[in-house]
Amino acid sequence: MNDDDDVAAVLDREFPARTVTETTPSRRGNTKETTLVRFADGEGAVVQFAADADAFRTELALARAVRERTAVPTPRILADGSLAGRPYAVAALVDGVDLHERFSRVSSATRRRLSRRFGRSLAALHESFAFEGYGAVRVDGGSDGEDAGAALRADGAESWPSWFDAHVREGIDALPAAFDDVREELLAGLDGASLSRNPTPRLYPWDLRPGNAVFDGDDVAAVLDWGGPLSAAAGLAAAKVEHLVADWYVADGAPLRTAFREGYRSVRPYPEVPPVYRLAAVVRSAVDSHGVVTRPRYPELEGEAAVEFHRERMREWLSSAED
Image 1: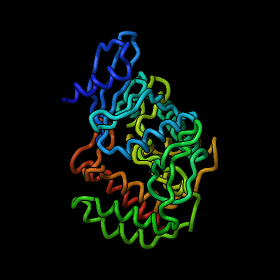
Image 2: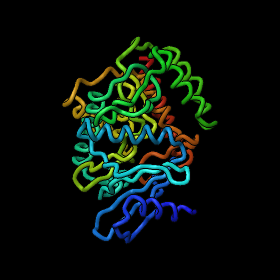
Image 3: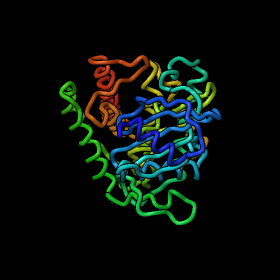
C-alpha cells in the first residue's frame, strides 16, 4: 500500500462509522509521516506513522502523561496501533495556525504573553516529572492504573558532569565544517566549565518551542511534538527553551527572556543556568537530527546567514563564561 492507502486503512479501522471528507499530508517534522484529516461532522484528526516503534511508544506515553499531569495543552491521543508493521497513532486535530509562522508577526505584547506561557509550561513539566538518572527517557513496559507517565524511565547515567560532557561533545561533533572556526573554542569552554555535581534529573522536552505549537489567535492551543525526551538538570532545559523562544525569532530577545522567566517563576523558582548550559543549548539547536543546519527566524534564514546566527550566540555565551 502507498501512504494514502495506509491512512485510509487506519481511519477505516479506528473510525468505521465516520465519513472522511478531506486528507492533507503535512510537512511538519522530520521523523514521522503526518496527515491531517477532516470528518463530515466537522471534527478532525491527525494520523501519524513512525519508523522507530520504541521511540514512538515513548513519545505517545509522554504526550498522554503531560495531558494527565499538567495543564500544558496537548492533543488527546484517540488511538494507536500497528499497520503492516508500521506503528501509528491518531490524535485529535487542534484548530489554529502554526505559531512558527506567527510568533514574529504578532504584537510585542502578545509575544511576551506567549513567552510567559512557555515558561509556565516548562515549569509545570519540571514539577511533574523527575527521574532517577540522566539521559534518554524511555517507556519501560506498561503503566499501572491510569497514570501513563508511570512507565517512563531515565535511569542511565548517574553522574551529571559525565553525561553533560558527553551530551555537549556529541553536539559539537555534529556541527558541519562551517563551524570549524569555533569548534576548538567550544571544546575549551566545555572543558573549563564548573557544574553542579548531581542536580535532580527533570524532564528535558527536546523540542518545546513556538515551531511545535498551535496558535488559536490568543494563546498556545496545543504543543505537538513530545519526541526524543531527555532527563537532565532543570537549568539545561530552561536554557534551551528560553533560547528557542527568546532568541530564535526576533533580534531583541531581552523582553521575551524576562517574560519567559516570569512565567517559569510563577510556578517554581527559576533553576541555576550557568553560561555553559546556554552554550550547550545553542550547540544542540544548531543542527537537526540529520546534521542539517537549522534555520532560525521567520521567514527563515538560510545558508551562511543561518550559520552566522548560531555562531554569534555561541560566541556570546563563550564570552559570558570567561567573565
